[in-house]
Length: 161
Image (cartoon, rainbow, N blue to C red; front, side):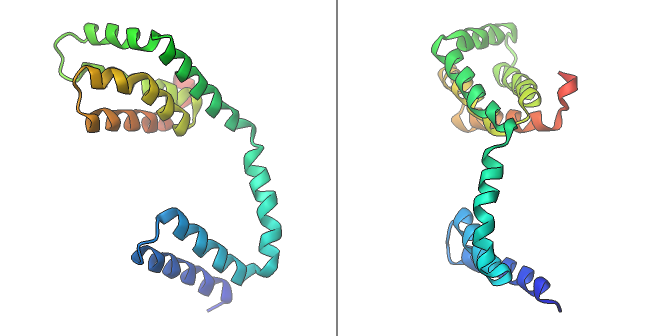
């Protein structure tokens, strides 16, 4: 078996061992990756890390994240989003969970237009969670609807919006 394949299997086994020790997932991935990356690439691995970080940070597409979070803060502070949700709640009439259904539709449209789950979920959380909790929704149901709607936007192509 070639060395690369042994390192790949060792990486997975090492990561699982770290999980069994109770180490958090993010730290376990980082430690296992660095250890087995160093075993495979040697000191050259640490020459690759700065260029990889720079490449990820300078992506043009990531400018949408702070802008959509800013949009959510502005809508929340101006109370426009709360008024819109109240209108949707009244339009749904006596339908159980009408505001949650409206939240999911808005989340799908926002997720499809941004393409970034984090920005959509952060914006929807700021906009809708206080309103849903004030209307008596269960916190777990409200949080689940927000997360689901942000994620559903990823499977909706942007040209459908």
